[in-house]
Structures are given as C-alpha cells and as structure tokens.
Image (cartoon, rainbow, N blue to C red; front, side):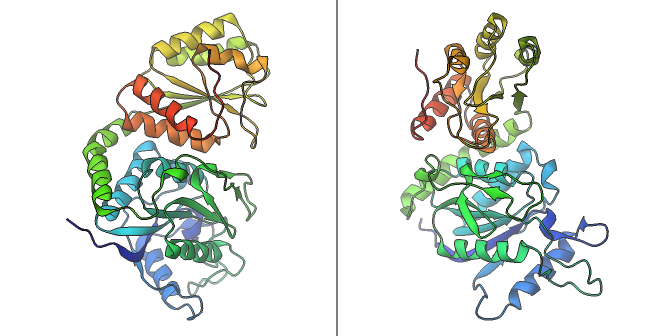
Length: 361
C-alpha cells in the first residue's frame, strides 16, 4: 500500500518559556496560546509567511524540567503515528532545560527513516507581558525568529532530527545547552555520525513501511519499559574513591540501567581496587557504564593511564558524544532491546560508526 507523503509542516507545541506570559511569567493554557500563535502565524506578511502549516494535537504540555522517559516516548509515539499517516515534516516547540535531551532521543528513535524533525524553543517568551490588553509579539524575544528559522528548515525537508536555535541548526545529538539565560544558549556541530548518517534522503515506500512495521511491533514494550528505565549520572570530584564506589554499589542491586560516569578531562577516573571490583560486579548485573567528560567539548579518550584502567572493567568510552546524547542513546537502548548483551552490542556497533576510539584489551 502506497502512502501519500505530505509537504505540510506539522507544528507541535509542548510547553516551555516559548508560551509563557504575564506577571509573574507562567505558561498559558494550550487552548489560549495555540489559537493566539495560529493567528500570529497566519497574519505574517507575505514575504515571511510559511504555507502549508498544520497543528498536531498534543495533550502533554509541561515544563521541560519535569519530562520523564515516558514523556519522551509520548513524543516519539506522537511523531510515529503522524509519520505513518504520511506526514514527514515537523517542528516541535519545547522548553530549553531538556531540549537537547529530547532532540537526541528522537534522533536515536527515528534513525533509519526519512522523517524531518526540527526541535526549537526560546529563552524569552514569544508574547510581550508589558502589553496586557492583547497578545503581541515581544520584539526583544528570540521566540519568533527561532520559530521562523525552524519552519524554513522543515520546509526544506532534509531528513533527520535537528535542533534550531539562535539562527543556527545542528544534528540533534551534537547539541548542548551552554548558557543559562543568554539568547545564544545552545551550540552544536555538523560533524555528526550515527544516528545523523543513518537517515535516508528519499525512502522507498516498501522500506518505509518495513521500518514502520518494525517500530510499531515494539511500541507496546517500549512504552512499558519507559515506566521503569533509569539513567544515573555519577560525577567524579576530588574525593576519596570510597565516595564514588559507594554510589556505584548502591546501584548493584537495582534493575539493569544506564550509568554515566562523568570523569575529569579526557575521562580520567580515580583508581582503586575496590572501585574496579565494583565495576566488574555492575557489569555482571547487566548495567551499562559509559564514561563521559565533565568538559563541554572534546570528549574522552583512552590515552591517559588515569582513565584507561576503567576500560579493562567493561566501562565504555563515550567518545565525543555530549552528555544529552549519551543519556538519549542509553535510554533508547534500554527501551528498544530486551537484554544487557544486546544493548551493549548495539552501543558498540553505533560507536564504531562515529569514529570513536574504544580501548580493546
């Protein structure tokens, strides 16, 4: 059966600063904000107006700092359903706190497809709270420009999941928030590998349907696992190794999870025999431990003895992946695959596509 592919851009509003208004600032209800946003878009001058925009109903609107794995799956299912019906181009407006995490998760989840998803938000509300008698665009806000830039990217229809912010755009899994209140709050880069290199420019109908059938067959189990999936982050500090060892030991008896070990510099982690033994035990219990850097740029390597020892004990190097990208990949593997062995195998296959170095012993 051939599905007609639509050129309409489906706009999804999920909350965040973008739709906040008033004194003090608070998110407007969807039934108030969405008609206002629709009117503002329709009333644009002809030089900037975007044709073929529709609205995808979304019942989950909340502050992005409150999002959970189940919420991430909600947006995955929402997009998957629309994609199966022939929609291919989407703009998702969300809050900036977890914007990079959600974008990276969707990039993982839709790898191998030809979907086009642009994720955006704003650091300042779209509407001017100084004007209380009517809803007016705040000319000092970044919201309107971020939205219009995202709509242009969606109209171009390039396959993949991208984050658009501050007049720039990047593959979602390369993006991180680097400033808590500046309008140029995000950065990323274009030298992305998996999953960005897995997207297909024009997917034949039979391959698209095969991809969709596979995703739909797993949806129920993905939703169920999202209720209990956990990703933990352990931050190395200048402490005795007993501190981080105790934190790891507390996870041993928990169900298999993802653990991000945030090392110093290029992934250096203080050594102790007890910590090495705990890492072995953590691995036997089915947990996946990924080493990341506390530095915002550069990632980790195994070239320093202070960091390389951990890779003898089943820790996986996170390479150049950002913390949001590592979280997203770990979460998707926990949801998508049913055994620790398959999750680890898939991670290593993915990393081999990124050019990341992993120490083999």
